[in-house]
Length: 456
Picture 1 (cartoon, rainbow, N blue to C red):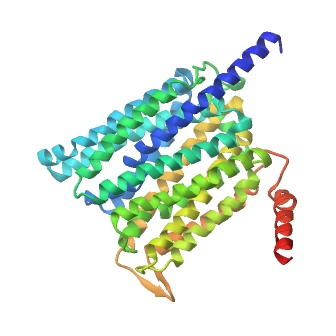
Picture 2: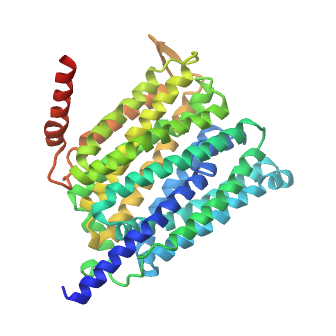
């Protein structure tokens, strides 16, 4: 490398580091948009306020991830147009599309409920398509501009900022939803979310990279690169683990707010604010787990987090219903889920970019990753909605456990998350440390010293 090339590389690295605060600011602001519009408890309660049955709610929720299949076709187009330009267009335009829901009361008065539901579905479809287009470009762009040696730390800080934003947004949402009736309380949140979301997109305009690409790695076509990626055993194993994690988690969590409200008897405003416990768990774990992943590798963080995630649906299955301590039990389970989810997200994301996906073939790999994530994420709420609709009115007792459609979801989620934990253990590590070596060299001696101190 010549002196000029070295200077250019250092300048590019410095520019990437300077851009990270803008990237994190986008994540902070976009959290308000997501949780107040389509991505959380507020949207689920909004659909319930419209009177949609669970089967239709599951179908609508599945539209968002299913549109990820578009990545297989649009990925090379996004690469040629530029990942940054594609992302800014898709994420910016979708805010205006979501704002069309503010017209829903007028559409209802003018055309009736059937027309309003059709209008809602149309808005969601267009929004989901724009989201898929933008996020197809997002993943290879993130791999480019986030330095590999601080990816875990960046993920941890982002988790904390997202948790803070989530806590603030959910506190406001809980106050708004709890103090009113009808659709207007949800429309106020949608309007505010769209404004903050646009500010977040403006922050991403300051991030470098994502320039148009005119060729593919090795001179292969996009189809050839997709086929090569599917022959990568480590990548396919990662996708299998991701699928089990996604379906296992979303199958019960997609309808968890309605379960907490309808079966556990918790008020709507409290249901919204319970999500703060998830964010608190993720924030407390995020910085520590991100630092640990950069120091010892991704898998020693991923495996314990995946094991903890297995216990969450069992906790929901065993949680007593309609008791004075129900809210406390829900808060604990939400918190544990936040810790586990933070660990899995940070460690699996770091492993994906630093070991599983080769940078030279990122377009094909990330297209398959996003498409598969869409399939898994779409199937989960769709199947869960059909199961709950089919099991409506059916209930039995098995000792202290109430057996119904939700209980079936909890048991199925445990089985899938156990399979995911096994599959994660078969992935190639991105560092010299293994989970066993970290436990034997770091945690066990620390526990031994603590026990000796207690004994003395």
